[in-house]
Each structure stands twice: as C-alpha cells, then as structure tokens.
Length: 385
Image (tube, rainbow, N blue to C red; front, side, top):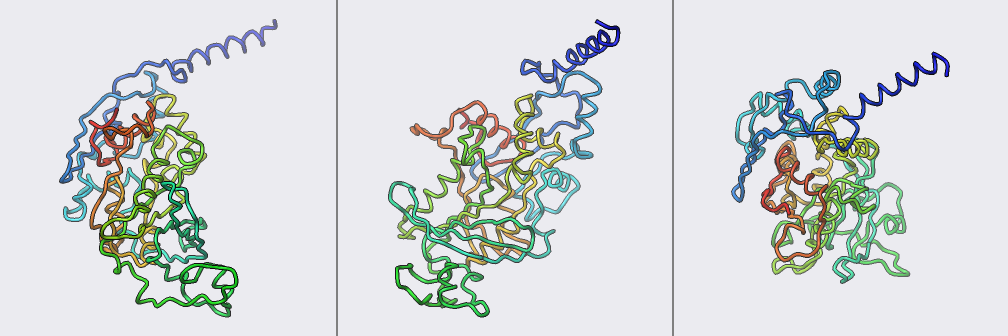
C-alpha cells in the first residue's frame, strides 16, 4: 500500500471513530450542558387539569465541543429565557417578553398579528359515502383555493346543514350543468337532474343546529394516515373525529361537523423535512428538538385559512376537538370571528380504560409525552401506558 493510501485509510478510520458516539443508537444520554437548551418551561392551566413541567435531562449530542456549538447555533436566540406561561391566558393577560419568546419559538402566529383573514373560494364539492362505523355515513368533501398559498386545503363536512357561500355563489356565464358538476346543488344528484335549485342564503346556516357543530382542525400526516406509522396519533385522531361527527346526538339528530384538513404536513415543515426529523429522533432527539436542529420552529403551522374556511361554511361557533391550546386561541381569528364554545379533548384510544384498540408503541408514547411537556398539550401524563 502506498504512503498516500495508508494515510487516507488512517484518516478515514479516525473520522469514523469520532462519529461513532453521535450516530450510534447506543450513545449515552448526557446532562443538560447548556441552560439555554431547557425547553421544558411551559405550563398550561385549565379547569379540568393542570400540568407543570420541571426541568429534566434529555438526550443531547455527546460531549464534543464542535457538536455542542453546532447544536447551540441551531436554537432560536434567547430561547431558554422564556419561563412558564399559560396559553389560555393570552386572551386576558398582557403581553410580556416571556410570552412573546414562547410564541416566536413555537412558530404559530398570534391571530391578532394576522390583520385580516385570507380569501378562500370553494372550487368544488362532492358527496363521499364512507365506511365510518359500518353505517355508510355520507360526507361532502369541499376543495378550497385561497389567497395565501397554492395548496388545495379541504373541508370534510358531515350533514347537509352547512353550506359553502363561495361554492353557492352564481358565477358568470355558468350553466345549470356547470353548477351541478362543481357541486353547487341542493339535495342529491340523480340521473336526469337538470336544476341546481339555488339555496336560500338565509337558510344555509349552522344556527338551525341546536348546538354548535363539532370541528376538528387537522393537519395532513401522510405517515400516520396512509403508511401505518406508530410514531404519532394523527391517523387515529382523524378517524375518531369522523366517528364523532357521524354519530347523531339528541340535540343534533343528524350527522354534523367539519374537519378542516390543512395541507401542513409535519407541523408545517413538509414531508421531506419531517422524515429528516424522524432520523434525528432515532439519533436521540425528541420531536421538538429535531425541528429546531433542522432550523424549523417547533410548530410552523398557521390557522387563518381554517378560520376563513369555517366562516365560508357559515360556522361562527364551534365545539373544538383538540388537545392543542394554540388551536383554541388561533382559530378564533384576529377579530374573534369564531367563538370556541367548548373544547373536547382527543384522548388516545390506548389511554382509555377498557379500550383494546389504539396505537401502542414506544415511539407514540414518547411523542405524546413531548407534546404535553414541551408544547403544552392539554392531556394528563398519567394516561401514558
């Protein structure tokens, strides 16, 4: 072997030995070497539960000054200065430097900073028979365009009471067949139908309902909804929301509810970046730390479009299915356009006593724990199996 080849082989061996402790799954957790990395500072208080989050050591890169510095550089400036804060207090408590820092690090926009809601337009809707509960419950799938991005966000509407204003609006030079094809009709389609029977705008309102409709603001999750991922509970939450909305109640004897399906994969960072975050999680980071290492906010989503879509459907008050306090605050809109009358928790099926279903995995348990501890989600840690 030549001297050059020998030198390269030795150099490569040294580089591999330096990387091994960081890239190996057997790496040993180290103490919190930088106080600014303390992400466990959130406190959420609600009538039903109070969860506090004491400082706890986490798995961080090994004791290597270069890697530590790289990690530190990826975190938002002054991130560790934000102390305990209640998200539900934002509506009444004055803004402080601490609460601003927490919101900046989360990436979720304060609805009051939006100014005005984006414009939305329902392009088409279609009736979809479903397999929910084995009863063949039907829903209407609405596809929206908007002034904020080029994505096709969706509204999954259960029941016939809620109608889109923008869809029903008469368009220039359109024929009755045009209206039937884009779904701007009343009742049901059948062979030979020729009239859309324009609805009365004053009738198409959720005020006919005896109670506010169930609403779920759901962000797209390809891995959890399509390829059977046990890293999150997104697919289960979507299924459970649909089941609840398709079940008649004494106050609303017909199925009723809306799932706003936002194209915000990976809490807004996209599928490719989410897969990178998964690799970082396998290397020892949690879901929040992984996003920060990739130079993304912990949560990069916004909800102005969801608010605008609900208003287009005539919804001004909701019973919101969520554990996320940011959604409770953000869905109201910049001028309190929507009233959240009630928050209904989305408790994982595996946490419910006597329930044999649900996702049971180490990954989803750690994911839920992180969302409670670091993102303020309103669930009790006692429920984690």
